[in-house]
Amino acid sequence: MIKKVLIANRGEIAIRVAKTLREMGIKSVSVYSDADRESLHIRKTDETYYLGASRPSESYLNIEKIIEIAKKCKADAIHPGYGFLAENSKFAEECEKNGIIFIGPSSESLEKSGDKIFARKAAKECGVNIIPGTETGTENYEEFKKMAEKIGFPLMIKAALGGGGKGMRIVERKEELKISFELAKKEAIEAFGDGTLYIEKYLKNPRHIEIQILGDKYGNYIHLFERECSIQRRHQKIIEESPSPFMDEKLRKDMTEAAIEIAKKINYYNAGTIEFLVDENKNFYFLEINARLQVEHPVTEMVTGKDLVRAQIQIANGEKIPYKKEEINLRGNAIECRIYAEDPDNNFAPSPGKIEYLNEPRGPNIRVDSGIYEGWEIPVYYDPLISKLIVWAEKREYGIEKMKEALKEYIIIGVKTIIPFLIKIMENEKFRQGDYNTNFLKEFKLEKIEESDEKLLEIAILALCMENKEIEIKQKERNYNPWKIINRLRNIS
Image 1 (cartoon, one colour):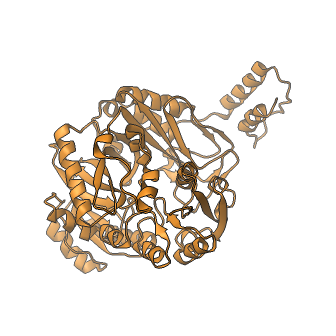
Image 2: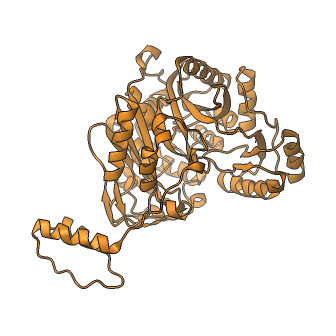
Image 3: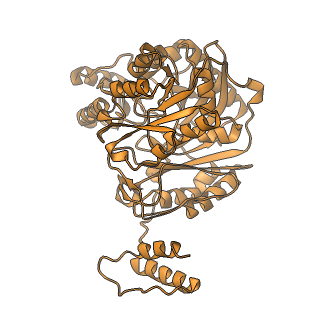
């Protein structure tokens, strides 16, 4: 029986998992690195333990240390969240060896699903179309070059143990192959500890649609419908929605059945996602298995009303899937926007720094999964995803308007974020019509938004006048910060 869970992650996902643990009456344990000593997630658990230095390799990827802490605090189970060690079969195996429940699939299933080449073979054996590509991977460029010439250009380089867009490169021409190979291999080694690469034929303008499944240890499987994930940059999703505006009932039936067959093939249990690319004629091709909780899982929770983290814990505890297929209904429309601390005007470069001011949107059917607070310093060592904004509405067009207004209310000052970029997407006519694919952002242009310090100062002064507060405002200096004036306003009673 699970009574205490160590969350081997950080930020908003650690907070999300801790919330469900509290609701279930299960004690939670967080871990933190040097860079996360002031992070919000360590305030949201019953216990917290120092993990190591700031770099992931010395902290959140340190299997030995995490197991040591789990044993020290007498945790019954470990929840890996997503990223870091979530799909690491060696980590799951170490948990199993030490009598700790891994809240996810078995180490054997993780090994099978994590090997993209093996997963492709499994899908093919299930009768599911796969994108033409190589049957084996390599770290040797000369071998890789021969494979590429056989597949033809354009092609996609992928890491055999990849995920989250890491170790992926589109190669349009033969002349680009070597540098792309070297960059992908380097990135794969840094992210997964393995530089094995393989090739898939590059499909132009596909949709990226994934199916959420649940399986238990008794051979039961259900799906919780699809998520549309085609709004991406650098192979990383930034907007997800459910249901997909592209989906019809036949396609949904065929894709969900295929997803479950693939899960059965590798004896998968717990929560997982089977991902597909779908062409304009609604032919779908297996892409990969994500053997973990997805970043975008709240979209599914909003349209089904089911807590996926609770289901994960119940299945890991040896229980059957907590609901039957007929209890899963698709209700309304949900959209998620990932809030990255990135500068859209500077090729989406990470924007670490101190959050000087924060206002998160609130209202009916608005959800914010956040790991930030005012005054917190965003570290440079981790993924720049800082929160997720999710909305639900009866109809997609209502959801888009709700999301647009919620984004306008989401104010983060002190660092750059992609919020202005997301607002423009919500206003884009093609997006509103559901007419988009994975190349949508390549054609999407965002006019640079200039923030005038003079204008901000005028707003601050106007706010002071409206509040009828007498605060001395000094002459503008070279290094003045108008947001500090606004912050002072908030502290006046």
